[in-house]
Amino acid sequence: MTSQWFWLAVQLTRRIWVRASLFSLLAIVAALLGIALSPYIPADLPTKIGADAVDHILGIIAASMLTVTTFSLSVMVSAYSAAASNVTPRATRLVMEDSTTQNVLSTFVGSFLFSLVGIIVLSTGAYGAQGRVVLFGATVVVIIFIVFTLLRWIDHLSRLGRVTETTALVEEAAAKAMQERHNNPYMGGSRLRHDAVIPAQATAVYASQIGYVQHVDIGALSDLVGDQSGAIYLVAVPGDFVDPTAPLAWVAGVQADGVDAAVRQCFAIGDTRSFDQDPRFGASVLAEIGSRALSPGINDPGTAIDVIGRAVRILAIGTETGEDRGPRFPKVFVPPIDIGDIFDDFFTPIARDGAAIVEVGLRLQKAFLALGRLDPGRYGPHALRHSQEALMRSEVVLIEMDRKRVEAGVVRVRKLLQAPI
Image (cartoon, rainbow, N blue to C red; front, side, top):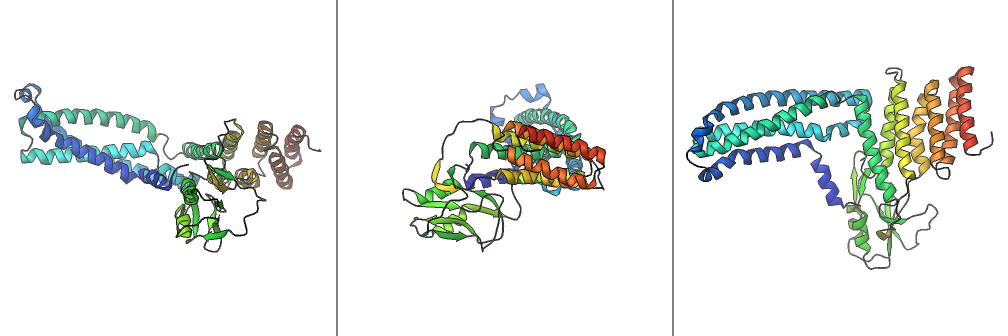
């Protein structure tokens, strides 16, 4: 599992201003490179390549990149608004962290600063004839980079902010978190069973703020225990809402100064949930997309059906076989994710809001049938429960002909799982 410092660094690199600043710094260095390399350029080379033309080229780049950057920013804001209104506000963060959009805007801003710095230095005469050659070469490289970026941006604009594209981003984030949790079921620690008894001498560590747990540094918690015979029992995991009245963890047998404060520092708490260590958040956001699509104002059952298929793909990750590597931090005990909770996150909102739409009801039954086949032992009971609950909701609003079609789907699920009909 990643340390908290590394996790914070990753969060920082997802900010658009960080990437734009790095591109801008690189552009400034490239523009000033001509001054440092001018002594190594042959004196007769400037007359051969016509380096004086660089003044006009830089002027064109500066004017065009400022316009393109302004236009791209307006497109980006429109895409954020479309994602918030047509999909869900919870997905806007993923659209904002889209690497292609950030690279494009950073390239445009960096190119503008490159041309601006080049024009300023040219006006001072610091380049000299040889320095102009270096600047000319760097300008040609920047132009090629701009053309490639523009072509990529045109292709990306056709998908930016659309419902399908944004839903795919949510699925990717949810699948990544699910895969990470499947590979490390207890985030690298040992399993804390639901019926486990916390030692009587253990002391509770409470949160110092109110919010959602976004990240837990299991490695740092293990370092607090060290070679001692104690252990740390997690109560709050990523995605849980915490407050100063509920414990984050129980600490037993750990002798150290300021251990409570050190344990709190291993928990990153924020105002919103994060996709990274929280597979249930991705499931909730996907279900919210499907539920919103079923609202009377949007009336898009196709998106809800698409979300159901994505939910099956994500849950299928939990059925993959992998090597059991054992706990990396055996003295930190972490509770497992309840499969029933993930089923509730995925399917309850869609089954509730799509009860009156027979196509959604049938697709739900097909999803439960597929999940029952994938893992009858773990997924079967939950698939059967949700299959029956979906039917109960549909029976209230569907006409008899459509209700019988949904009932046939439930019968197939029951037969597969050998449940009484």
